[in-house]
Image (cartoon, rainbow, N blue to C red; front, side, top):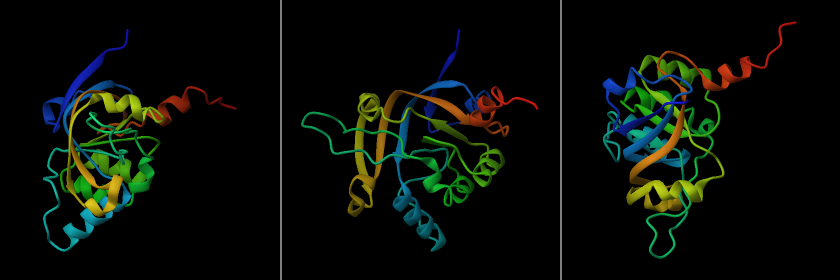
Amino acid sequence: MTTVVRITSPLDDRVIDKLVAGTQVLISGVVYTARDAAHRRIVEALDRGEKPPFDLKGQTIYYSGPTPSRPGAVIGSIGPTTAGRVDVYTPRLLAEGIKGMIGKGGRSVAVREAIRKYRAFYFVATGGAGALLSKFVERAELIAYEDLGTEAVRRLVIKDLPAIVADDLYGSDLYELEQAKYRREG
């Protein structure tokens, strides 16, 4: 039987040490949406010595650009986007204190090394399930870069968003671990 671990964002070190690649998690608490254009602006602000639109320490970024909500809904479809789109910015944001990232697909070697160095995690959520994932969002507030439309930065309060640890602080990568099961030595 697979154990599912409940975690809360912002992430703290008491939880971080217990998670390894392959662990199924239910994430609750505060996460921030940001895709490529938002990442670029956040890093540019940091480069200018300005504060980012939210305190990065311990936070989790969800790589998503939610669609507009229907009347009465908290948010529209909110599926993960391919994490590789933001790999160029990720080591910098990890150095600034980001502890968790939610997306889909594998990460670059540089990002995986930064995850290990800065004791962080990359979680994968199910792609193509954005309408279902919206059910785990209790509140959504636009906080920065409104001109980016659906890709603006939003502060979300989530409850039990399902994900899996793909890259952990020990250097393990779920994609590599699973692919190794099917390699034949020859």
